[in-house]
Length: 141
Image 1 (cartoon, rainbow, N blue to C red):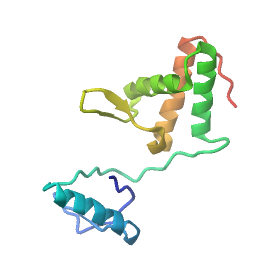
Image 2: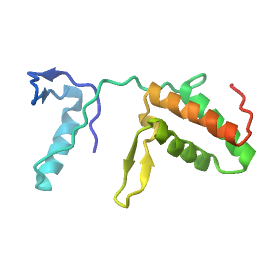
Image 3: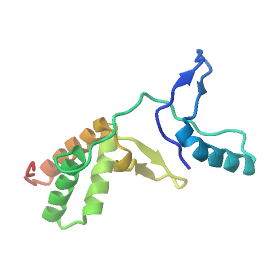
């Protein structure tokens, strides 16, 4: 279970910060807390960063741009859309696209649904590079 959002911080010091969970997320927080207690865990995982600008979706969006490139490359190579998209995401890791490592040591690129506008632009630039390598002429639609 993941509770994600932008939180106000209170009483921050050099080594401590208190987060106030918004009322809209209270039920999710209580479910997570119950799970932590039931598993006798003594910690929760927290990831802190600057608020991110979510990627755009729909016609004319960066997401549409990237997925259009994946479709064009897939049509050219005969590979599946999903295989092309995953390859580009794996290539994008070298440019700073986020990833995680699973229990088996496999590198898993972040889901595009979680991508910021900056991360989406990394995917687009990587798709341009992959297309160039394959001699695919992309149509910028």
